[in-house]
Length: 155
Image (cartoon, rainbow, N blue to C red; front, side, top):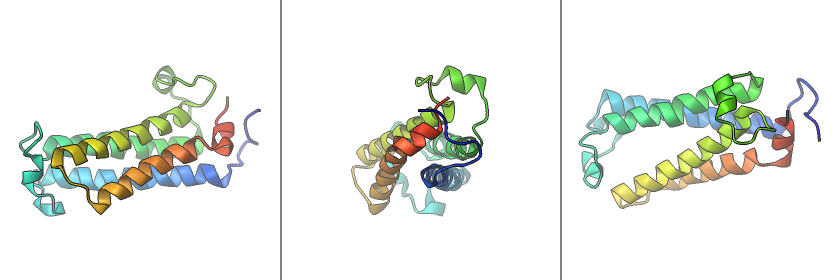
C-alpha cells in the first residue's frame, strides 16, 4: 500500500502529533522546573524521592526529562506533521520502509514507559501521575502502529 495522498493526513496522524506535542510541552516544563530548582520544591517533588537513586538532586533527571521526553517529542510532533528529511534520523530508523519520524514515535513511547517504570522503582511508589503517563506512553505506541498512521508514513 502506498503513501496517503499528499497533504491529506488522517485524524489518527493528527492525534499522534498532538500526543507527542502534549508530552513534549509537559516534559520541557517539568524538566526546566527541576533544573531551575534541583531540590524539587517548586514542582512538589520531595528530595527524599531520590534516596534510592544515584542522584543527590533533580538537576540531571530534569535535564534528561527536558531533552529526551521534552525536546525530542516537541521536534517530533513537527516532523510527524511535515515529514521532513533528516539524515541522522534515517540512519537511526530501524524501519527503513517508513519515514524516520514514525520510528521515532515508537522510540519515544518506549522511552516514556521506561522512564516512568524506573521512576516508580526508584521512589517505591505509584501515583496517579505515573498511571497517566504510562497510559500516555501506551497510547503513543497504539496510535503509532494504527494501520492508518503506518500507511501514511510508508515511503
